[in-house]
Image 1 (cartoon, rainbow, N blue to C red):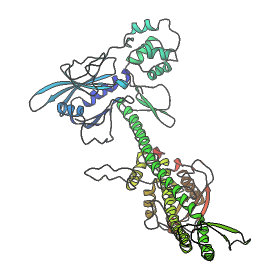
Image 2 (image 1 turned 120 degrees about the vertical axis):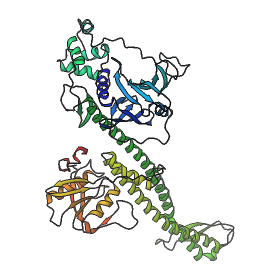
Image 3 (image 1 turned 135 degrees about the vertical axis):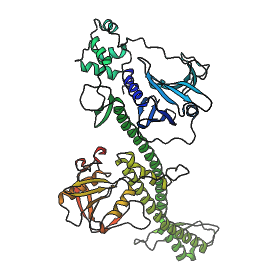
Image 4 (image 1 turned 90 degrees about the horizontal axis):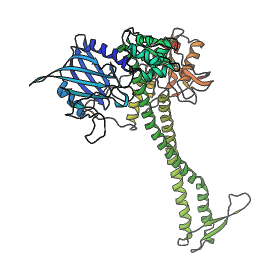
Length: 560
């Protein structure tokens, strides 16, 4: 990401045009590396994001809401104290540096002061520092007095800019000509290493723009010429970067650098949030699956113990049949096994302290206990296997998810199961119901659920004559073809089956069996798990998994 001084110069210019004259109405700090300012301007309310993380540090405008913590961190409280209702009078970049400062007119009940807020966008050294008359009032990341450091950053110290880099100023044409004199080699690395305020990606574009061998004048013209074409660069089907200008292909142009930056980081933040949420849900689910598998292993062991219960019963019967031959104090009885066609004998262990009748009863009681255990454990096994299958269905939907919206209802499902701890708050969180995946084929609408809760809702919303589809032997989304009472063509049925196969555990295979029937033959048993149904009167077709992005409804195509 080219958050170099070249890019930041235009970001600062556009922020100045948008925000100067505006008043800071709200300040939040959602996490340790993110500050959000809500600023009222003549054109309306604007949300400014100041991200100071090692990766993705930036000054950008955003639309998405980020929840704030219940209690604000100390630095956030300091900013609220001094900058609440402050007016922004100027936004400028320190020449050639990745530092932007805000000049602020601050008004309180008792005084009116001028303050300067520095935002240093320098990778892992990124920071935010509030100053008054050059003295630090507070910093997001401070240095201790005893630390050996070139810059002192703590309250009461004088604010000092970082040491300038020993590189050539791109505005100094004479200096550039001396630098380039006689050079022949890797121009990209040479420019990035020796010209101030230029990231490697920007240097690569300079070289590309001028045929691989740019001159000093070319570098000066590119950086200082003022001609820009903001864009988002695409690669591998998604946004890869944004730039002030870019001479390559696979890009989308925007009217301003801020808009290009906002579009790019909206995608990056969504992608990161989706990845984090997916990992969190899968982790919680894996722990529960492991617990269920452990329970199944214990149940299997109990069933193994019950395997010999008929032999235990036989021993009791043989003792009873031969009770005349059993004497108290015997530790073993060898009796003819009358169930054995060959007339074989069996040795039966006895308890010396018990009478013959009590020894027989001991085996009968053990048999009765094993029989009760078998009945109980068999039911437990059925429940555990059903639970494991249900958890695997949730896993399937998480793996098939394509956005945060796809996961939100699954998160609520896991909370209801107690697998994820619900965050306690004064208000009950209402999760917005995400629309079904929707496709149009041959004039028929095809709907696919995104998770178990959606599968239940989709089933309820379908008409009795609609066609319902589900993979055979795989967990999958429920798919409905809205038939409108008409006969569904084979081509539409096949497309729906391919969509169903794609959103299933078998999406990496081929010729996946998909069952289909009319909705009226699908029933949901009372008190069954979300997404669980039974069905009859069905047929089966084979389908190759296909997302059919070309059939997706217009509002869904960007997510496919």
